[in-house]
Length: 137
Image (cartoon, rainbow, N blue to C red; front, side):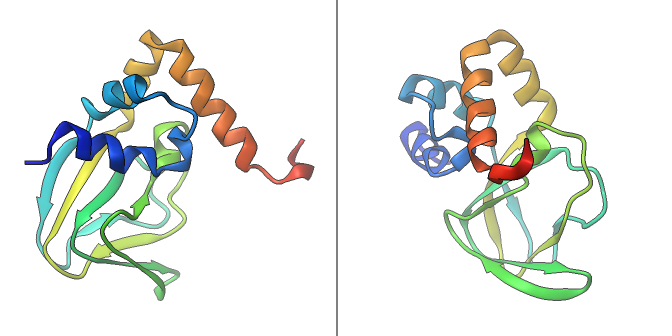
């Protein structure tokens, strides 16, 4: 079981939460469940609507697009963060390649939390806007 400060440290690395204070990260960390997965478990399937966000605590996963491996994820890596904000299809498949320990935040719990914490919502929206290409507007 991860210590609360370890969860906060992992969340702090996620660009979506870059503007959040330690107190706000602590609030977000209460949403994160620590879950163990076996090898060859598909965490995210390309083309399906995302409902959760993952941060790998331990273990590895393969990221593929259109059936071709494009990257490998390891401890500290994260994926699926846009599922917290939008009901859009996933753009890749992520499959565990070892035993994995991960923090998982569901879109529903995150959306409920930001409904009660508009300042966190504003900071997350700012982080998303900063990541958009300049010609997006």
